[in-house]
Amino acid sequence: MTSDPGLRQRKKMRTRQALIEGALRLFAEKGYDQTTVAEIAATADIATRTFFSYFDSKDDIVFFDDRSRLERAVEIIGERQPGEPVADLLRRVIDQSVFADTDSELARKVGPARTRLIASVPALQARELHLLFDIQLQLTEALHLACPELDLVEAAAAVGSLVGAIKVVVAACQKRGDRPEQTYKAVQRATDIAIDGLNSLPRPA
Amino acid sequence: MTSDPGLRQRKKMRTRQALIEGALRLFAEKGYDQTTVAEIAATADIATRTFFSYFDSKDDIVFFDDRSRLERAVEIIGERQPGEPVADLLRRVIDQSVFADTDSELARKVGPARTRLIASVPALQARELHLLFDIQLQLTEALHLACPELDLVEAAAAVGSLVGAIKVVVAACQKRGDRPEQTYKAVQRATDIAIDGLNSLPRPA
DNA sequence: TGCAAAACGTCAATGAATGCAAAATTACAT
DNA sequence: ATGTAATTTTGCATTCATTGACGTTTTGCA
Image (tube, rainbow over all chains, first blue to last red; front, side, top):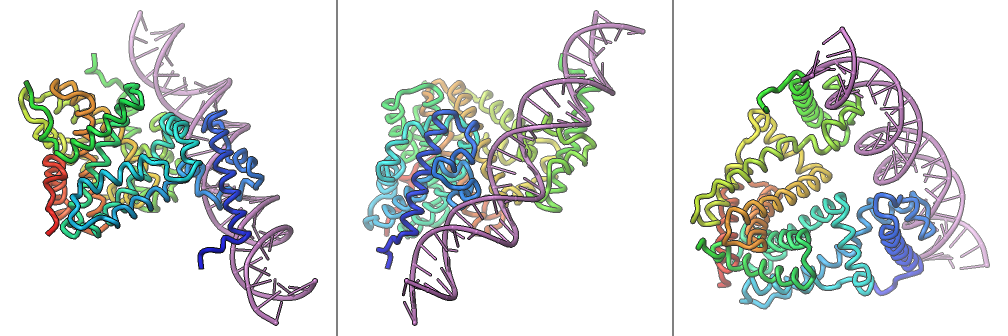
């Protein structure tokens, strides 16, 4: 039933891909604000108006693989082994969906450049946080379903606490200018702190 | 030095106040998207262009008291008693700055309406999350300063974990349609989970 | 009073986003 | 192959937020 891409679908796919690549290239070359939607559309040979049938807004194009990342995450949660501790499960979700290059080669190709881009454009930061927030709500539902022992509030707290810790830690590291190596270690530490709780933090001397 | 409001400052204050009240009234009456900046400016008898010297953007006006909330929070962190556990300190920060009516009467007056407004307008949700994120980074610095036993990563994880848990839990409650009473209890639970860690969650039956 | 700074306003322009109706393209059945 | 229905694309007009440049008005202060 779903095997047939069909000419129409294939063409759309190609156009979409072209838009993503063109947009990211332009953003890298001239900066996000200096790039107009009309220019992006031109790279894929479509009318400006048509751009908006592929993406709801100019900033959406930067987060083209969000949906597939979320799906991957929900899938992992759904495959939870009964009895598996929530902490372990979420740990897997983190590095297999958030930090893995989910979307084929494209995601890997744009990875670092995109990170820098988002960090430098306030509008993109806001969009990312909004998407991430929405994702957390969906993960909450998935977790609640997969773990009957958790009520909705507990599931939400688990997701929010872990994701929140990581997100803020990563930002703090970037702000400080840490290398990826160091940032990665910080993420591990953040994960541990969320899992073991604030009370596990060092006490005053 | 700072005692003299001066005519100029007082006038600005009054205009600012008028803009806030006018804007929130219009948003409540006709909705956020249906209200133009020109209309908001008109309620305070200023030119449209001038609006942007009071607020950087249309959505900024909704978060007029964010700055003062942050300042309150940083202040509380700065007054930490040496030896006070981080968890206790952050608990105080949460209910004395985030959930208190910081900004005089105005904040109280618009409180519930504003919450509903933000929840119903995606652009405002995104803006709120962005501001909250920025606030967390500043709280991280403050906490790191006030608690020499915590390195920057630990401070960031503490703030992110606690705030993240609460934010997601509140959203989940609102989505479910909980009453304020219930939501409040959920916030307490979220706080406890962040403090005690994900491992404190119930185990599978 | 008179000057410099701070605010304000006018004008014009840019660019994102959306609604609409016509034109082009694709899918599908005959 | 052909006609028809469904889907996409497009051009066009419009609305509106946001910004820059520049002149005018107010206010603070010497």
